Length: 286
Ligand code: SAM
Image 1 (spheres, rainbow, N blue to C red):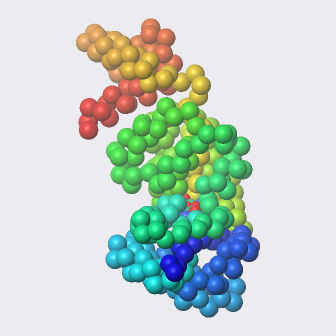
Image 2: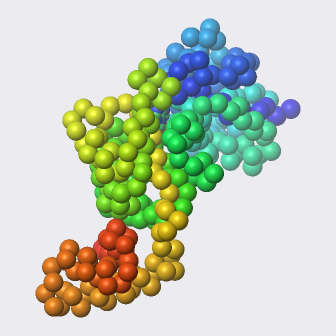
């Protein structure tokens, strides 16, 4: 008999958010594979559970996944947990789950908290369609390129971000996506839970202040507005804009003024013209 691999969600802050089913499963399995055994041990101690733990994190994922598969093949049941929320969502576990499926092992999800959905439900943004992009790249150029890729998606955009990068990310998002409604969900389910609602520009100003960026954050950005140009139109608009800008530059018109004038002449919104121009520059520099 093969064992079962349970993918178990744990709280993202408030310990009351663990489900009864999650507690039963982590109490009954033979082994818990966790990102940080000390962290998970605290959770287990809180609920009086003594199940054996083994580490499974991004640095030992490759060899540990094979070992865990052998345990499952020997009939042992394993629960996979991460430090917070749902494993695999911007956390380790994908490799193990894939291997389990390839080896005919049952994979059973035990649902619970995840920061992206917790943030989305109280954001006031549409959840009819949303795009979760995880963490943006750490380097500014790669981050801006990624934001450009997402710029025309007409669905709510959701990102995870680290406190030391939130100010830079908001600045880049404002630059690339121009001013859109945005929400920062901070310290969800914890004592100092807070939703900051505004626009990319106002939040960028707020979070660039010293000391503003403490805690854990989810950033939500309203999707591209219905009146945003679609990619095909956007391509031809970009071409016309580039041509007109190069003419104006030859005439000696300064860049900002040229962009304003060209946008007006071509009937393109000024923020859209700015975005198209930035996209062209980024493409050239890659
Ligand atoms: N697996 C987790 C989940 O299901 O949400 C996410 C793990 S990821 C390594 C950690 C990131 O999730 C944090 O940097 C933050 O962006 C977000 N996050 C986790 N807990 C949070 C909380 N309580 N409040 C706000 N954001 C949180």
